[in-house]
Amino acid sequence: AQRNPGQPEFLQAVTEVMESLWPFIEKNPKYAESALLERLVEPERIIQFRVSWTDDKGQVHVNRGFRIQHSMAIGPYKGGLRFHPSVNQSVLKFLAFEQTFKNALTTLPMGGGKGGSDFDPKGKSPAEVMRFCQAFVSELFRHVGPDTDVPAGDIGVGGREVGFMAGMYKKLSNTAGSVFTGKGLSFGGSLIRPEATGYGTVYFAQEMLATRGQSFKGKTVSVSGSGNVAQYAVEKALQLGAKVVTVSDSSGTAYDPEGFTPEKLAILMEVKNHHYGRVSDYAAKVPGVQFLAGQCPWSIKVDVALPCATQNELSEADAKTLIANGVLCVAEGANMPSTNEAAKAFEKAGVLYAPGKASNAGGVATSGLEMSQNAMRLSWTCEEVDARLLQIMQGIHAACLKYGKREDGSVSYIDGANVAGFVKVADAMLAQGVI
Ligand code: NDP
Image (cartoon, rainbow, N blue to C red; front, side, top):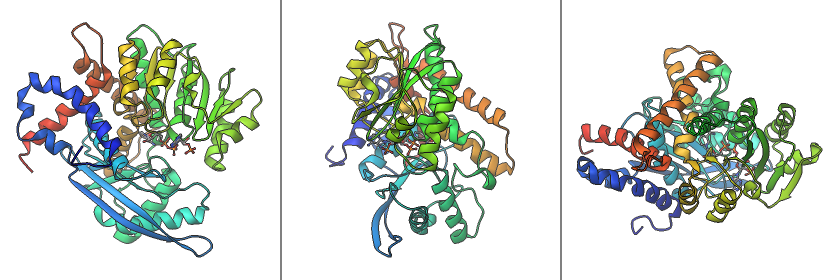
C-alpha cells in the first residue's frame, strides 16, 4: 500500500490474487524465488501523456492518456483502452494486472496491458470523438505495434473508436500492421469479436451450471450494464432458453418481468448503439418495462446474475440480497464488478461464483484469434471462431476446476483462476531470467 498510495482498485485486485496464491506458493516454494511476486505486481512500463483536442466550437480540451504495459512474459502486451471520466492510474493498473492472468488463462500467447483516457465520450459529436481518437493515437502509436503491444476496446471504446484509432495508426506508422483488435470486418476484424465477451461469459456460466446438473433453460437471469458485453450476454442467455429480466446503466435499471425477446434486444441495441441513448429511453419504448431510477439490478430475485457494467458495482450487501433470494450462479462479464467482500460472501454461501478474469476472457481470446487471422492474412467463419471461443471457455473452466478444487471437494473459481493464470506467467518468467 505504501508503494501505491491512492490506488485502491489496484490494491484490491492484488489483494484478491495474493490471497489465492499464498497457500499455493507455500506448497510450491519454487514460486517464492527470484522476487517473482514483487516483479509481478510492478508494471513493466507505464506511459502517461497529454491528449489535446479541439471541440466543434473550436475550444481546446486537455485529457490524460495512459498505457500500462504490465507483462510481456508470454507475448505482446494485450488489453483494451477505456475512455471514461473515472479512468486513472489505479483503475488501469488493476485492469492491466488482471489482464495478465486472464490472457494466460486463454492459453494464447498474449501478455497483459491496459490503457485509456479520462475523456468522456458521452454527449460528444462523432467528429469530436474522431478528433479525440486521432489525438490519442498521435502519441500512443510510438509505444505499440503488432509484436509489442496490441490494444482493443473497453468501456467507451467500441468498433467506431477502434476504427478511428486504427486508421490514424496506419497513417502515422505507414504500415497496415494489425495493431488493434476489435476492428471492423472490412479492415481485418474477426467475426464474433463484438459478441465474444458476452457469449463467452454465458458459455462459462453454462459450464458452471453443468457441474450441478443445471443449465440456462428456464432460469431467470439479471444482467447489469447495457453496453457491448451486456448486450451479447443477453443474446446468448436468450438463445440458451433463459429469461433475462434486467439491463442497466449508470442512471438505473430497466426491469422487464416478462423477460427480453430478440425483438426487444434489437430495440435496446438500436437505442444504445445507434443513438447513444440510455436504458430509460429503452424502457420508455417497450411496454411492460419498468425503469428503476438510480437502482442496480441486484435486488431482483434471479437464478443467475451476470454483472457486465463496471468495477465494484456489486457490494457485499448486494451479494447478501442475491444470496437471500436464492441465486445459484454469478459469472462476471465486467472486470472486478464484485467487491472482494461480495465475492467472499458468494463463495461462503456455496454460490457458483466466477471472477471476471476467468468468465470474461472470451473477449481477449477472440482478439487473440483476430491477431492469428491477421498474421495469416485470412478470415475464419463465424462457426469456426464461435467453436474456438466455446472451446477456450471450456478450457478455462477446466483449469479453474483443476487449480480451484478444495479438500472438501468444492471449487473456488477465484483460487482456480488466480493460480492457473499465475502458474503460466510465473513459469515463463522463471525460464526467462531476472529481467
Ligand atoms: P461499454 O462502454 O460498451 O458499456 C459499459 C456499460 O457499463 C454501460 O452500460 C455503462 O453505462 C455501464 N457503466 C459504466 N460505468 C458505470 C458506472 N460507473 N456505474 C454504472 N454503470 C456503468 O463497455 P463494455 O461492455 O465493453 O465493458 C463492460 C465491462 O466489461 C467493463 O468492466 C470492461 O472492462 C469489461 N470487459 C469488456 C470486454 C470487451 O470485450 N468489451 C472484455 C472483457 C471485459 P453508462 O452508459 O451509464 O456509463
